[in-house]
Length: 524
Image (cartoon, rainbow, N blue to C red):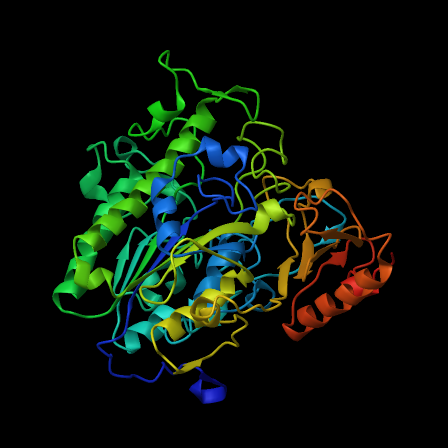
């Protein structure tokens, strides 16, 4: 693949237009919000877990039977960083959208601590070709891959959650990144409500564009699916290749008062109370019932898409499906069970945390005539890898971007599943997440590196480094930092070199205003 980084006066140029080939595959990326790697009936660990037995996701099982299950797929611990990496191909340390975005020019970091947090791009990513002067403030200019797909003959559809740019910016609208159709995508990173009778929420978390469903009783996940399938009819009729980004708001909170009535009965007894769950040793409460129903409703959406393709066999035989989540499942309230232990078991912690529970994701890929059904791939994949992968799947070899691409295509792993590679993954989160700042559980400002069997975490506020062997200790309970100092130093240098190469920002001490040491400069 040839890529050329544009500089100077060419920085606003769009990718070179190529004629679409009749062999170009259709591509569907099905992205779930806040779904942990165990929150489904498909096991992504070496064995089925108690959580796998709690949830009902028959269509994820169906997709896994059709394709390949990736057991070591990763994303950022927070939504916006992952979604901006997905759209740009950049690691979060490079695009600097390191926390969740919403209001224009307003950071969303929780207060407290002994550090001055660094400036970050809280206005998100912005389209390089059309960004205004306002858009460029605290933002990363991006040539998004849907733009490249569209310039190469694809009909592009965005459906659901966007969360790319802050309110009032060009980047808040998915259409600015090359989507021909935008269904319900905006600056909001969550739904105000999943219920049509509540008009899908109000205020900054209102899901817009679905007014025709108000008062109909149509759950949000169902409304989005209906709209997505309807949008597919145009490119199919015109025999154009399509890219559908099916980006669900599910399974993000709110849970309470947001029951998907189609599925809550599967998690309640005849008396209407939650079923007894042997894993947590108690009945499921309202939040947990509605959370499980959200998952099953998301899975039903996947099934509707698979059914649609089966009803259109000519389309189905040329359609790739990728399934992924944007960060780990909630490990704190309002979830039930032992906080940071049960929600993503056997992984530790959850969304927002540096630990496995915050970044380990469920991932499945089906590619007709390429992938073999019921196969497992344990190679490591990171969220920014989807950018070059999807373009390679589309057969687009020559494209230009204003940004440097950090992602590594995994097409070779799909075509040759016997390949083994050591994908080194780096995380950078010099921020504070609002839901939890429990540093003991991996929350707060951190950077991390995963290489081989080892996961090194560096916490900026304390300059503490923790080391875990994730092959032997997926729950990350045994900190090896004191017993493996040479490996700690080696990984710290590699992490520091990567952060410096991306020009990553770092915090300062409040009392001295001096920069916090890089990971390689910290004392054991």
